Image 1 (cartoon, helix red, strand yellow):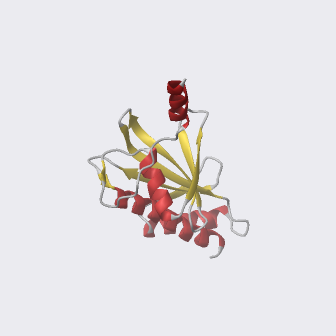
Image 2 (cartoon, rainbow, N blue to C red; image 1 turned 90 degrees about the horizontal axis):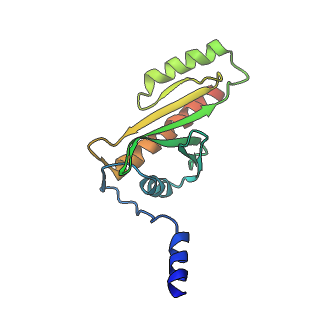
Image 3 (tube, rainbow, N blue to C red; image 1 turned 135 degrees about the horizontal axis):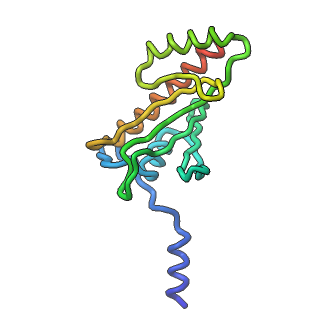
Length: 161
């Protein structure tokens, strides 16, 4: 009976949390490293599985930007990449042509991410983090934060300019 209680307790324990260590080299990307990096950054997130079977992380950054992340090029031992994206509605006070010009100008000045039109006509920011040959956890976090910063600048460009 004691063994059954111990086994039940072990099943209900969430995956082991990873401590944020800036200099730690990640040889692949996994949820614990993402969670540690987001927590260290002051972001909140939830995870859900899409109808395509992919686990998506809905992130709200400290600057209020909402984005989604998912891992790519995955094997049992981890993933080699992560895509980040954020969608922005077409500004009501700008024409499609004006927004397209803003997108082109914005892309010329922000090469760490790309902005484009999504399938539904919304403006979409996207970045990709690569872990091939390893990435320091601090660099992983920094790339995520740069994306959040680019999105904040994009929001200002779209709605306040």
